Image (cartoon, rainbow, N blue to C red):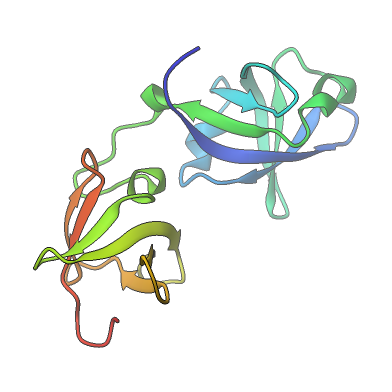
Length: 172
């Protein structure tokens, strides 16, 4: 199985005795990813290759998603999956509207000013409220926090992993 995969959740535990697993979601599209019939791939340190799993059911419980998989009706069927990561194949991701991006497409991009000065690399994306904030790790010094707004983020070239920004006064 080749190709690129993207994490959609971490399988942290089992739940009850009926084959349910507890997942910490890491996707912006849980209703899509955890929909009945969706196929996710379990990557686990103790398994040589990814295990394809088809969602049988999904529900929200506290801060988790509780999932069951087709052909895995009992706790014994899923216990071995604890500690694994659920991923989706790159080709199974939906196309996003113009101007929208997956977090994994942005994280790792190099960030440059409009003048061509390299600021660093996007290391994470925070979602504090009104708009996302991109955390840029410079080669030295403190992290730079860039709000994801049109006045700051000028150009995103996912293919070349390059972002051009306009630094408003006070951002650095």
